[in-house]
Image (cartoon, rainbow, N blue to C red; front, top):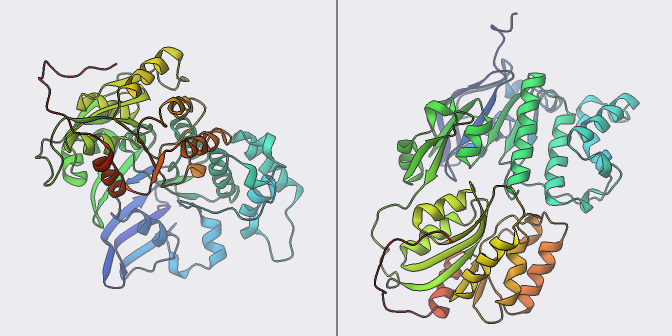
Length: 442
């Protein structure tokens, strides 16, 4: 059989999967070739994880078929599946503090009988893999001592150790800072191109999908609504139809790849929203975590400021589109003293501070540190989901500063509704000022 005639690594043909009376995906067609990197995207609940679980044989289709390398997945034994496809789930709790080397060696389990031990050659290959993932110096350390970014790379390493021809990644960049997101997806793309492994990754960030994937497949309410290369799939119309968000489409002149810049949706203020020009409320975030809060607070009539953020960060682009004053740093650089000074000036003028659940690394830890001088005097709300320990990529320093803020009087809130209720209670209302022009960027 020639390469051109070889069956695809993964094929869904008219596949419908149901959860009782509810449809997860309906009549979905999807084919992934060997060596291809496909990004699976869509709103929450669109069917991305269902596709993954159907490909693994966890969810049998009620209609249509699911095939791995030309064979119906339901006819394969668990060991045969484990030799064909590896899976990186959205979240995995590491409970036993075994060494990182032993944890990654778990990926060799499908190739051994019950009493077999891994060979010296396998241990050598895993050590080489740890070197590739920049984890070789942690090989003998317990997995519970790993940082969040290291832990995500360890889970990827265990999947790569299976040496399967198909790799599924379910939202592998969730809770990672931008540096770790770029690093992980770069490593995955290199793997696909250098070894011919087929990659399917569920991604929320369309711009990351466009940067790394060969194809983007968009799901909406269980249906496939778009499928093709990023240059043909990404469009302003797609974001409006599927996500309900207005955006501007731009092209990166260096790569020729498209990217979307979300902007404010022209809509009426929600019924019952507070009167205009309340605040200002300062939002601390990064990596796209602040974007929905910037939009909602602006549309609810709050004057909003933000920062410190990195140029090209989704949050910075949304702030610019909304006209939100913001302290901006160069891409990927640590927050410099000049930017921190502008950020502290915005904090000093705030009537309330909102800290969204953003990933905290060495480059943006200063955003939390600079709050110490304000939290006792300005109502400060800390959104707690996901918890800070899952977003701390600064070797525990973010958790330590977070604890200081709580001890100094910061208010922990679980969700958006609790935040809005707190702001209604804490933020004074002021008359609408005369408008001299659009606010700029600090």
